[in-house]
View 1 (cartoon, rainbow, N blue to C red):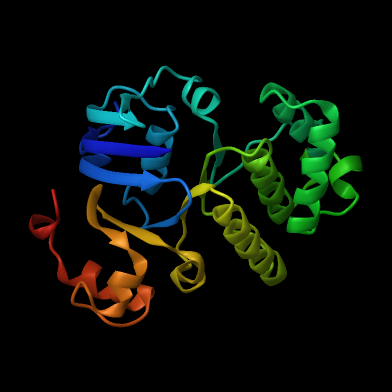
View 2 (cartoon, rainbow, N blue to C red):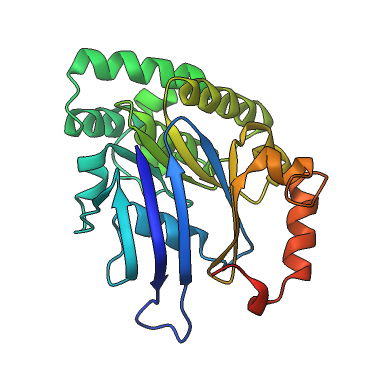
Length: 254
């Protein structure tokens, strides 16, 4: 699967300035792309647009060379996308197991397959018995984030959008998530992962998208960016700091 945005701009109705400005980028399955930017750079807006949650933008969006149908609710179902928001909203009276089962059934899985996949995800994210017995209204931040990740990844989607997935996770869970995404990437999953923890995200990144003030500052290979091919050498977080500090808005790619 290939996702392509061409000169996308979007402004929230109540906002005075665009959240995204003239964004052009390509995303592919079988690769992990890191989406980096400061607070308010447009990362969550970009993910909501890619998953069909926002309409009224200018520019074009294509999936596998066909125009994307962005009518609300259709994109993720039709194109087998998974999505984990930065702040998960879960039904307070259901358990993680019940919610994941519902989502799995909505994605066409039988009960046996749901059980098999959820068991694997519980092992991957170190989920205990609470995921089957405790209702979501009693979950900690980390428990809610793990549940959201299971919801995003159940049913083997082609592409997963993970908004700040490391936020709230303990160090062991972060390591488990990194290993799991690498394994799924090797089996063909595509991932767009936003994170402020660039030193963590860099270890699993194939590609990187840097946003500033709603514009794409850089998109391409993470190895090329950090290895000198783009004129920079060093860690992703240091290069990002240098680029973000040096480039004024007038110098950003359009």
